Length: 93
Image (tube, helix red, strand yellow):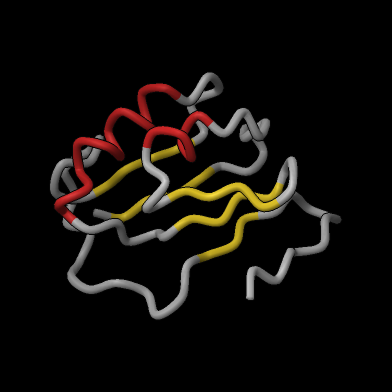
């Protein structure tokens, strides 16, 4: 499943991080880190996180995703850190 977070909509409520911490993590108050290629085993948690987002900033594609498009196999080697324009990314290492 492929995930995309619209950072113009995301307000940092962190509901996704509470419901699917294996996929979404907050660093600081506004910096979201997420794995854009969530494991299929996490499909139910991700679906709850997508539904719980108060501003509907998360889009799930692929098996079990919102539009059931082919999200493609595999995972990224490193999670994507999502930050708003003008904000410095936080190094999670």
